[in-house]
Amino acid sequence: MALCTYAIPKDFYIRAAKESLRGVIVVGYLEGVLKVGNLVLAIVAGYFAVSLIKVSHSRRELKPWVLLIFGLILFALQMILGALRAFQIFESPFLTHIVPSAILGFLIAALVMQINLNKIKR
Image (cartoon, one colour):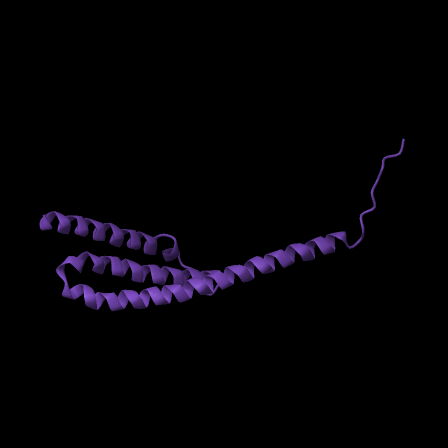
């Protein structure tokens, strides 16, 4: 009894590798486009945050927002660092640990200040 063998074309593996590489290129391109979009939005968010600092100093009830604004500025920095990492220009451990921890710290501090401000108001 003879085993049934199928003939595999000689260029089968080359074609499969090219198709796989094409998918990787498309995913890399898509990731780059999304990172550039994030970068633009981060710059806009940072601009709004800096412009809000002036307004928040004039009113007492907006004092907790100053910490939230600093968190927003750090978020813009995080997006910029993420775009640099995606394009393999710069990589840092600050991306995954330090900057997000600082963002979370500013957010928690702003919430605590806002709660205390509302308790004092009553």
